[in-house]
Image 1 (cartoon, rainbow over the protein chains, first blue to last red):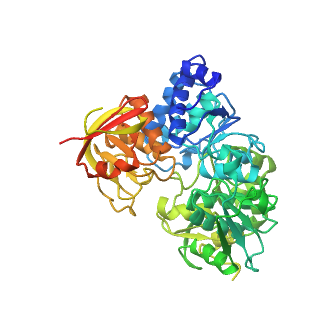
Image 2 (image 1 turned 135 degrees about the vertical axis):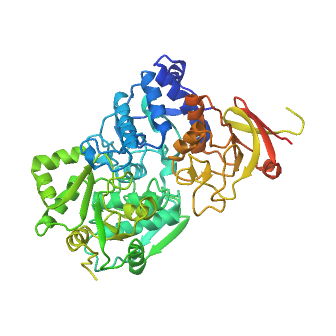
Image 3 (image 1 turned 30 degrees about the vertical axis):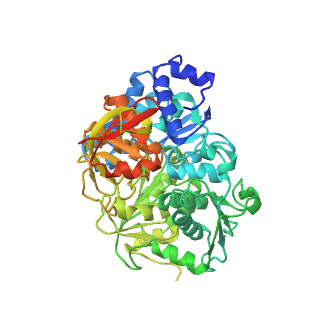
Length: 415
Length: 143
């Protein structure tokens, strides 16, 4: 049984309301199962319970609503099952759509902020360096820990909401400095010279660390120094898909790794993985299940949700012919608002592109045509789509995705 | 304690009895268990197609996405879940799913942590009964 501070006992006794009592009771048992000695304050939470997994999803949140629950810290929401702003995009069973929408609204009734994005780090709720937070959603967790230096474990189902309703989080795992040190050194010996941008190298390395590091923290040495925050986002997202990576260090790029020694907190690596240009090329090739020239059903971008910076890279690529296949870009309603203000949303729609918010093309039924291969620039989408959607996949750069959307088949721009 | 019974640590309380099902490999409930039928649907799992409904499920460790908590709780709600789960490594995803179902539906699926030295005896029993109280749990072979 974890040690309880006065604040925890107050929550557990019902002094802070019935919902807080319910949530704290679950948290105490959870802490026992993970071996946490006690609790600390959480500064913020990100909840992944808006995605409908069955009646239990709704029953749990409705129960908290009935008990009068209110979140006690700023709490953002992950994607739901429907796009509440463009509900006509939903192509699944109507019953499922309305239960999914109700689930999203019930979270709002608890005081959660309706961000409905898997990239809460792209909102004003981005945590500060060192903040103790309770975040769910694998790509958000790895981004918060690695790129920002905030501290969260891999929270999820039910427990994320319990932390939000109590403002407390069990003290174990990545909340503690000593568990954040790197265990595996991943050394990039050479990047393929034909890759002009850092994107593909980041995706390849992310895929490798997911497969080979499991839950061990890797430190990556030799990533291109011009890797952007969006490149690191893509790296983390694929690493958290092909494996259970919750934190990586990129030496010289991420805040807890100014040097190799700092990343390892002075300890030697348990294992060294060396990657050459051929390894990186082979990994990127393995993400595509179809060859150049294969006919496409659609192009899907923005998994995780597209940032404004990514849209600014997309805009110049839109001059020219309209797409001949469906093109979807997933983003948050916040970013959509910024696109409308700039007049970009109109230009994007005119180019034949569908903007999807609040949800995402691989967690719910939105894509109209699944009768051919899907092309994406997202390593995470490439990893999950064959299983989740049962489709063939082509992975390529943003420019290749747009060129392919015009041609209706997979186009490669570099040999 | 009852003669011949084994002690374990309670992760989620409750009492149950059922036929033993030993998982040959860890199973992620998310993507691996069909809550509608109680069957294993992970196509890479050696016991794919078999039903876990009503069994005392013996698993060395949990695996996979935290969405597994929802799938287990949903299976308990639909009465397609195991009646109890015995682990050799504490697992928060499994524990959370069982605790939430008990709170919401009053249906207990006790989850207990066994001792490594008892594993052979536990896996050899055709049927097990479990009583998981606060902190301490007891297991014994029946029939």
